[in-house]
Image 1: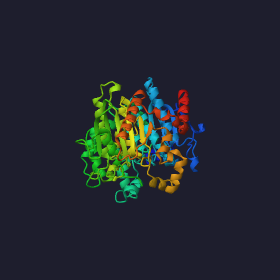
Image 2: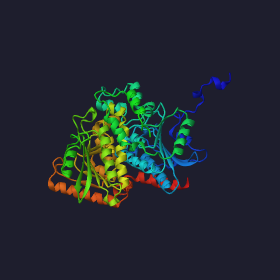
Image 3: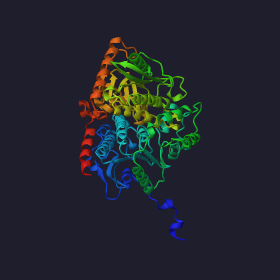
Image 4: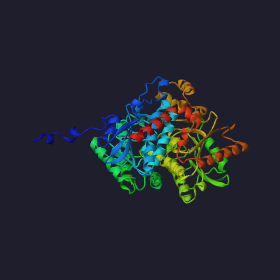
Length: 289
Length: 277
């Protein structure tokens, strides 16, 4: 028996989740085509964290890389979950908005430039509260402007997940790629337990959390598009295929009636069973697009 | 503690539209009406508490699933009806904002409130990009995901200037707990660090507001105050029509040039490096 037969695939594969935000973004690009913009050596840091005795980081936890993916112009913007929980601050938010706007400008002048958002984030950075919230509004606006011309692809790989205001950024993306280790939701379980009580959400119930927020569920119910293994090459291939596919005929977030009707049909007299919901939504037509 | 969300919103919706009733088909938490405004018609939208909502976690004036989709439906209808009109004739859309927060509920998370919020933000932004002046009047609270869903995509934002107005990413008690501070410490920090502040006069320093307005009793405005607010809204509409349809004005005011120096530096640096990459 040869070695390749006895070593299962998952041993040989290159994990994406184990990469940091910068390496994740780099891994998506065609070799030798990419360059990081406004990187750590430009030292544009949060002006607000040092005022509160918190060490800033020289990239503010946001990495912008421009280059080619599958031969097409693209920009990747990654939030580093290991810095302040991937939170949106003034600088990290401005980086994302500015990169999206430059991609829009290029796209409008005949050079379509797709954007890939790597979102590992708990949402707004509370130390920069209102500038973080404003930045989220600006990011959403800039995604909506770009996606008319070129696809905006969100990757949520884990393990931080995508929560808070940036979950809306995922919601308005052209395509969302998730792994089984990723979660996507507006409010994390701890926040719900804190605000509405343990009867509403027991944040220690891991099975419940994954059943609601997990990548398998979000893709299964049609609120994300593709479930990919934690494998760098497979994730990069998924990104390439969405860039080739281009702008969807109708973005999911414009399908108001479909989703409003689905909410109207929910029985809210008790908690909603995630598996049943997945079956109902996943089986009806329209779903992803 | 903040006052009950929605009382100011309802009062101002009524003051501006003469109407106080939900439309057929909308949940009781949504007030939506086309009303005459300055010689044209404007669409007014407001989220108010509905104690009988079938979603328990929105009953205090939070923005939940039904609210987000109802807002989006009303906005999309206005966009469609005005589709063939020239930009100058597209109706203004005015969000009266007084929302406690997004809904913190398990039903909401299960059914994808993140996406519902995105659908509503998309509708507001699409209206703006199509040329509708989208104006937010913050009459009371504008918290977090509630504000992102209802109002933050506006191209002009106005707010009252009293202590009942709170614009923030998270209410004080929770923000204190998460950042491991006391509420008193948090309030003190707010006075030194504008983006942390719960005071709308500090929020004004961020450069995001078109104007601060004053009323003596925002829950019970006088005729003269209503006229003054209408005048300010009309000026905001005119200004929006004369400006761009994106949010670039966020960084153009004198206040923004002071407070958001870092944002402006990022944009300049990225633009320079983008050309050579």
